[in-house]
Image 1: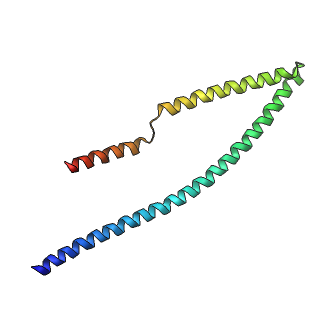
Image 2 (image 1 turned 135 degrees about the vertical axis):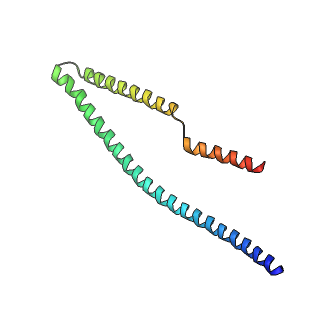
Image 3 (image 1 turned 90 degrees about the vertical axis):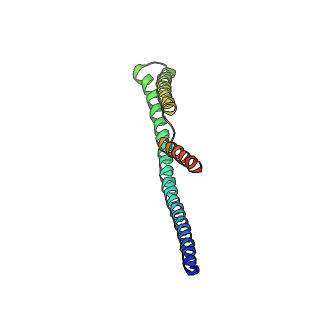
Length: 129
């Protein structure tokens, strides 16, 4: 009977060791995937930042050209072109700001993750009871 108990003990020990190895492997895989994902995202974010900066500079030049073109074509004073372009840019900024604010306040943050965490908490509390 003692040999039987020993083999059960060994079986349980091996099972726990295998579970620990599996968890360590999963954590190592998750870390490696996370590093790859961060590297990919960093490259994409850098490219988007460069594109945004170049786009902003191009937009400034185009708006300046339009502001100078208005008085040149109409014979109005130079300030009128800049006032018209500035007013249009202000309207665009207000519209974009209102849209962005409504999107940020209307949407829940990470709804699936939050729901899963709540389910895990309920399950953990049920296991304790």
